Image (cartoon, rainbow, N blue to C red):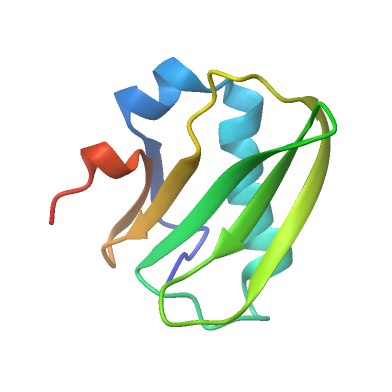
Length: 103
């Protein structure tokens, strides 16, 4: 899952709520910090948290007790979504809002 050589996308909902640098940060976290350390599921979660005015991104996935927090030197904005999903369907990968996920 989450092979960096496959197509990667962000939905309109994500693009309209987050700057491109933060969207890129999700892929960097996956490639440089999670890949190879954890068995990544098809869907992984990223919570956006206010850490004393700065943005922290918390990785987690269902049925796993593991979470990892990445503290950024980026100001937190109250209009950021609380949760972002990363989905890998085996062919491409997408960053999306939970409301955009099909169940």
